Length: 186
Image 1 (cartoon, rainbow, N blue to C red):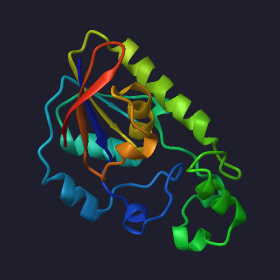
Image 2: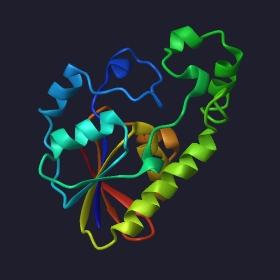
Image 3: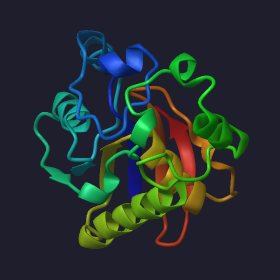
């Protein structure tokens, strides 16, 4: 099965380098314009996070395709870090602890990063199992969600942050039912 992982286009929060997780922001004009200038691979089905930025991206890239949403594919809840920039959080002892732990742990009043990664992989596996007869799927989701799935399933294994990708970009992969092989970048 061919699977394309595409990170949603830019939002105002992305332009400002803010932590945007549970905030349901739409795409900004710059994000929409960038998406129009990227060549995306075709697919038979589009699976997306139910958040505005992913749905808008999916509709722009694949206007004639069916889009199916899965709640577990939404981005991490950054809790008290939500909507803030790195500079705004500098000096925050919880933020410093999170940085010192390599991005692991629970966001204050937010989601635990390990639970988020597990949720993302569970959402991916559910979507794949629900659509296992489809030969090519594009997942239009969040950066953290992509990183979680690829960290868990790509062979040879790499770390979570090795799979960061820019807005509107991502990976073309092949999934054999057990593992994922990256064959190209978008």
